[in-house]
Image 1 (cartoon, one colour):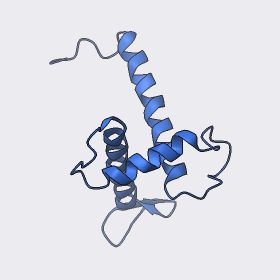
Image 2 (cartoon, helix red, strand yellow):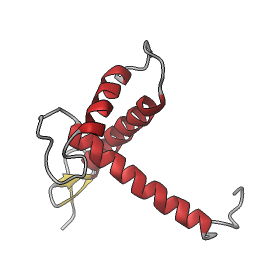
Image 3 (cartoon, helix red, strand yellow):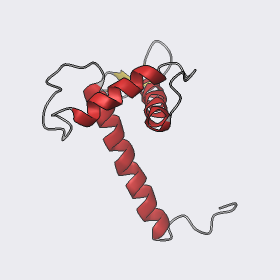
Image 4 (cartoon, helix red, strand yellow):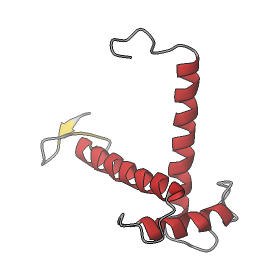
Length: 111
């Protein structure tokens, strides 16, 4: 059953809506930083976390577990999370591309 947590948010299965929103926001910020670092060519980039994310991406590209078969054998912090976020982003991007190509979403005001 749904109940109200101490913050006033709905709970289902022990996870509050506030917790889910916080997790989604964190994932969005992480994904933005990953996408930025993939294309950033500035060695002195002022974006916080860019240099570390660039190093992480170098690792992810060469990690033996890149296929998602297993946890990172090197135990690099953020490796599996980065792979998961990128895989999710690619799946959603492909789905959006297919839906736009099929004409879905046409006819909306302002579109």
